[in-house]
Length: 128
Image (cartoon, rainbow, N blue to C red; front, top):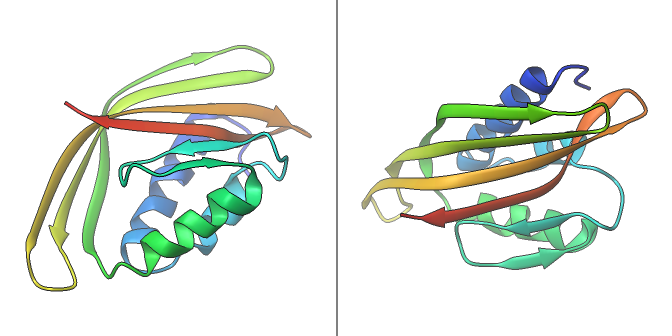
């Protein structure tokens, strides 16, 4: 678990890199267990609730990407109970079919302090 917002942001992108490698399980520990979480991710899926969000990550992990995810130009805003991260996500690598993958997107991630640890409650991306 993460006790600082910066640690939570780092854990989020470490989990994203594991997802690109086919493993979505790291997201289970960093996302809130509450059912008010939501995901508007790069595939266009709109997921509301813990089960829908985790199912979407499992689908994305199975897509067979390889590569890396980096968060550039990070900006954070933090209160006692909520944290916000905006950045540019840069993904590069290959698809399962060997096609090059290069994607730069804008990203907003919302964190909530739960039992002393930052947990993700919303993630939104869009292409620019």
